[in-house]
Image 1 (cartoon, helix red, strand yellow):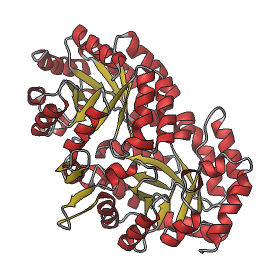
Image 2 (cartoon, helix red, strand yellow):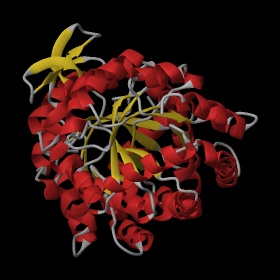
Image 3 (tube, chains in turn green, blue):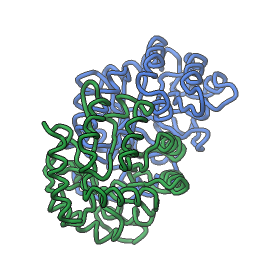
Image 4 (cartoon, one colour):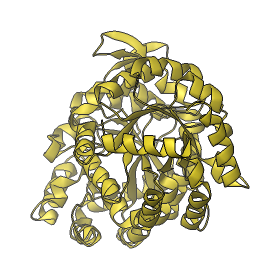
Length: 250
Length: 250
């Protein structure tokens, strides 16, 4: 568990009275300029920034450095939603690139498992006081195909839904957070009862159909908003509107 | 199924009498220069190039363009081993960036499933005559934690090892190839009996302990060699040595 990341997001959430993580999923030309503009406009209404392939592939890590630094100067930690999912040595290289570029937390898919898979990611994150968030259940419709299938949990000797097994592993691995889609509030409740104090991050609100109030009532600590804010005519208004809903749950 | 990618790798394999895919997993400073040098030295002994986070995060997609073009001019297709694993709209953006940068095939993790997950990746690849390779079983020790666990296959109404379910899905999705670690030859045999003519790509030879002969005898069409070649004192000699083994299976 990384004190650094958890403290940073808690501080920002308290300061801005917000449980909204801004996902800077920006498309088309001038991605980085658009992203910077949205960050400036919304920074007072969010508690964290999340960056994924949209920006990494468009401008590379070097091209993101200024944005990450700007978020930090605004008091906001930055998650890189890389959904890391490779063998240990490659994960280690990937993790180092992200942390060296200033990111405060990485997301990992649980599929590679611990030994020679994700163990090194957690070790390095702990050493460097960075966060690791485990994707437990995705937000799209097709997530049910595998995340909700019944599988055998070797550790507990029981059959259970795969995402519930992932949630138990995230606790065992001492994750700094778990990710559960806002589109399945009942699953959030179930994961909450498994992970306890480990914060739940929920993507999939608004555009994908997740409802902010329901998501937070079900047990999520943070909602992740991407297209809802970035593709809004007025990102600041949308961010404030979402912030105002989350404020009632603070 | 992409004629383009499959034809390109088949042509290169026949031309160079090789079943070796070179994984350009290069670390430290001057990654792209090292990668280019290894490509030039080994190009006559390989049938394809694979690029992953090592290079993407170090130089970005723009920084890779020349290398990808050089591989093409040497008659070699290029796989981007991105292990794509996100929701559909993000996967679509990611896929477009890779294909626009000249890559001939992408790798995907099966975990997001089909609907609003991987379906668009396969559709775009088909439209653009590019390849999609599905990771069915990874090569590291911890892969057993989830890939080998027993799960319920909704489509077939049976319990089976998760990697065997992934293999059946890859066939249904019309993948251009599946990836199965060379460290588990028995699993390669099982996957072969499921996927039939769909080529199996096997990483994990030499450094991770996989044995080339065993891997090919078990049913793999291609072996993927990364550190074995890139970290060798003489990459060309090592590539030729591996090529000579695979040649006996052509």
